[in-house]
Length: 168
Image 1 (cartoon, rainbow, N blue to C red):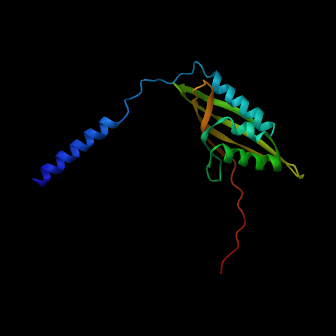
Image 2: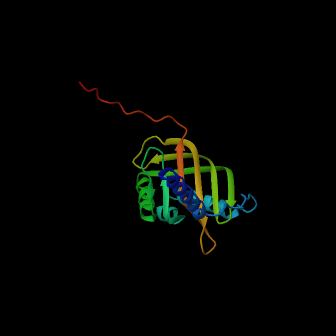
Image 3: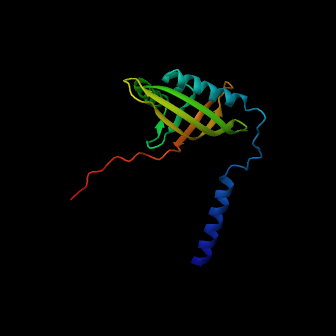
């Protein structure tokens, strides 16, 4: 009897879970109208190269997430603005972004590509160079504009190791 009840319970649970799942999307990715996503990318580059942290943060949703290499995730407008402001206070930044793939899925979008970055210390010194890849997810807003929901980048360059003190 217990075995029959367990089988019946498992079957009912599986049916309930399948019934709660969203229907499969028939939305195919489209490359036809990526213009709004291209604009977000251009606006990001312009704001970043101008050192405008508020304008950079304004391109993200209120709960947007930035996931930079070698650091914890940064969530929300204020945190994204503060993160960029701290960098722009210390460096003159120049980024160049080259898209490799841009797709639209209804009200969602994806942009993937590569970047080169030059950070010149405002206090003087040699520029710091970086190159890497990125993946950005976007969502169309109720006003028709597009904003970044998730932004991850990582470097192609090896991480410089900090010398460690030997323990005895």
